[in-house]
Amino acid sequence: MASDDLLWCDQLVKFYETSTGRVQAVRGIDLEFAVGTTAAIVGPSGSGKSSLLRMLAGLDRPTAGTVMVDGVDLWRLSERARARARADMITHIYQRPNDNLFGHLSAEMQLARVAKSSGSVDAWLHALGLEAQRTLRPAQMSGGERQRLAFARAAVAEHRLMIADEPTAQLDSANASAVLDAIDVLAGRGITAIIATHDRRVLDRVGEVVELRDGAVSTITTGGARLSVIDRSGRLQLPPELRERFPHGRARLRWTSESEHIEIERP
Ligand code: ADP
Ligand code: MG
Image (cartoon, rainbow, N blue to C red; front, side, top):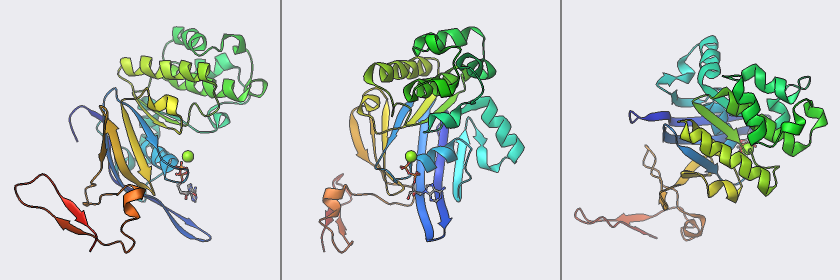
């Protein structure tokens, strides 16, 4: 872990026991994010994005592995201490807007409850185009309005770490831009944002893209370079089009000690 990492996880694993057997949702993920990073987590449906985010946010206990947020080992804390750590530093936005909102409160009251400063409520209602909805309750709002309100709620809290599960899924491009602009503003204030998404508009705006496949990280793109990931156990995922060339799942590696070049050969 580098000293400027805000969020770091090591060998993170999540299995679910279901009536039809064990589901291996996350199979050993190592990641690190510096303070102020904006990162997108992408991957097909079922690749483990939401499971990963819930563990990073301190909401769902890993089967194994470590999550460190600002030097705090989240899953070694007591239940109470973890709740306090979450309340101090982490916002998690669920994929379904209603899961983030109180049904009986107006938009403005939802924000006032968690706002760090009172001025920020008006500022974020304005920034996210929700001034006309100020006095409405979630049931009186459209899906997109609720999604922006859920985001506004996270923004006013000004926690150091914001984790958002598909926050633009229900937004048209103008409203998605408002959310993306908001993420830039938050990143400028040193807030680290980790966003699961399928949305290309998000990918163009974040600093890093982490691609999951079958519960493991396959590539990380940063500074325009898309790199395959070799995890701490030495595992490397081939892209699907290359994987097809190894129907028996065996490969011979060839390299020389001087060369940076390694060959993966079908035996
Ligand atoms: P994504 O967000 O990328 O769609 P998820 O983390 O939701 O991926 O799911 C990863 C895998 O874990 C899927 O096979 C999903 O069906 C399974 N899964 C997720 N949550 C649960 C749960 N609470 N109980 C059982 N299986 C789950
Ligand atoms: Mg999901």
